[in-house]
Length: 301
Image 1: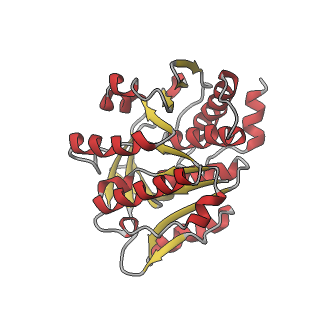
Image 2 (image 1 turned 90 degrees about the horizontal axis):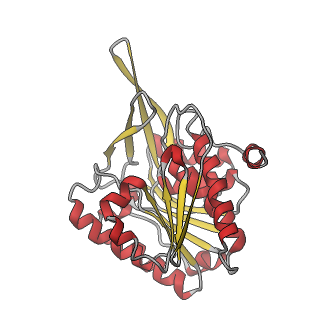
């Protein structure tokens, strides 16, 4: 089982027509996206998050239920609103974010029990919570308990300049979690933020780097390899990295406790590349996720 912990929010995806901008509401939040993708790919997954007792929170809980997710660990905060992320897309489908996230529900995450952690093989931690000192302590406590119970910890950098306006202090905070995680994911841009020299120090981690249309790269114990992606017409890249990460993790979860051979890593990245690419062919981070049969068809070509 994989356990995803972190933000769940509404992506408000903007589109301008005839001088008028309208926003389409979509479910989002990186760790929730990952959890939904894992479920779509056939993995056993639980998600822990927090929403407000408002229209958006009700929408997200209903969305999760309708998607087939277990909503038992999504906390409803009666005193806070749900986070919103306004998303603008350019002609290539690349996105820019503006977060409405001031003291919202995901600043107040529910406690994760040892019993729930014990059920998991891999514990995945979201990054938006790192903007708040108490939430950093919350994340570090989960990682420490997960490791004490012999679990693998995965962490996606998912750096957002709209949330972390002070890059230097944000990087210092991120490095605390990166140092304690077993599987870490960067985008190509995030490698530049943290520097190639720093990423090269993470030799005791499995490092995954997304390269957009050029696929992805793994680095592990002094070795590395790149796997190509497939060619698609991108409509919206929101959630592409989350679909990739879920795809790779769904395969790595099958090999927990076994040696991470080059073949296992290449196969995991190939699966993730196809998942991420196909997810960009429609709008939203979750609604256009490919199913397992579709991914396997691409893998067999």
